[in-house]
Length: 183
Image (cartoon, rainbow, N blue to C red; front, side, top):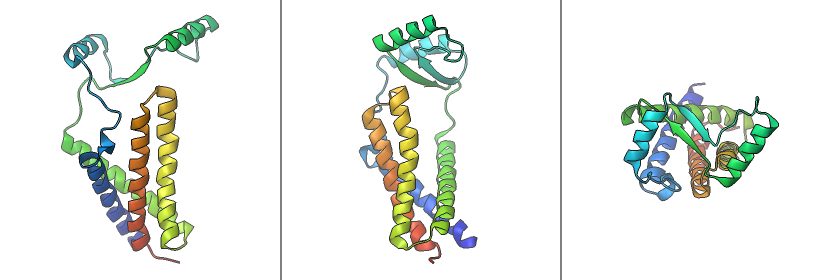
């Protein structure tokens, strides 16, 4: 159990470090992300119009209660555009250091879960590295690809996120394969 925790902690820190490299030194963190044109006016409009933090889709229809006519109208608006998703936090973000600390904890938790699975999978060094990479690829395909499909996340953003996650978990997999007891 101690080796699992140590391996998870070290691999989590490595995953966190990879995130710094991929976002600060490589273009992966910025692909598909743009600043809002006329940001001040748009933010003022949102502040005056949106009362609560949340994820907002437009056009929107409540799929559970929509009549056929409402669904037809929504389909027409969606086809005509524009469409989008706005993630809005009325009160602003937590301090950057707090967000970094949360990310480190997320990476460590993920690495502990991958370490747990790798101990049960067994196999040699290469098998464990590939398995960790496949887990990263699985996670990113099942999360990022649906966001691309349903919420129109940009393709380059989606691909860069997939590369970032897969490479990161391959690197963390090397650490885990090295630190975890073998068969």
